Amino acid sequence: MTTTLRTVGTLRAAPQLLVMLPGVAMRPEAIFDAGFSRAIAQRGLPLDLLAVDISGVGLDAVHTWDALQKDILTPARERGVRVWLGGISLGGMVAMAHLAARPGVADGLCLLAPYPGSLPSVNIVERAGGPDPWQPSEEDLRDPELRVWQWLKRPPPDLPVFIGHGTEDRFAARIQRVAERFPPASRHTVAGGHDWAAWLPLWERFLDAGQFSR
Image (cartoon, rainbow, N blue to C red; front, top):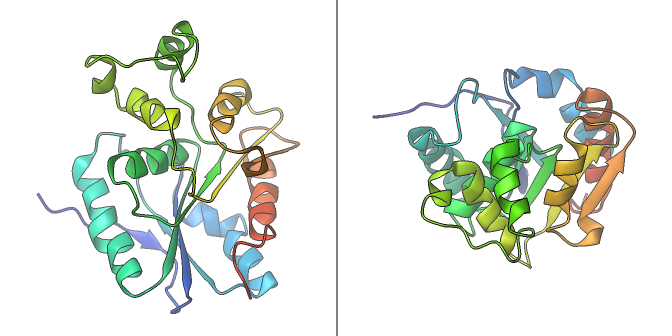
């Protein structure tokens, strides 16, 4: 089976690329409509932005994630581009799942209000006392959300990560548990809910963090 991904954005041969995965029912155009590309241009950063259409695709869509790697991430890195993988809401969980299955394929991770998993999945980890003491069973690892939590037990210590969410986000408590798996300097909060009112300020903070030299 061959999968062709629809992307929004233009590659302008910048030395850095961020591939952003949208949330549930979110068209990739929405990322540009919200001002993400404009914020890059305003800062004069040498950064290309691509958004990938993953509407209707779940965490176990093997062909889609193979295409993401083969058609977008690998060619960019072969050109010598520094590649970040990012995601909003479910797209954030997919970004982590992609790195969990393919260690070392990205140079950084940008997570904006990443979906932390359903309550049944998260509760399995919580009942074990949290990610550190939790020892996933074979049955656990058939759940793609729990495979992400397995990766979160020991995320790569040298991987640059930005993770942020709105303080009024309906998933805030669970997102905070994800954030705690990364160093304190990686974690950010702003006022707002699970919406663009929080995601755009977080994006601007990410761009201002000094990861992308002019």
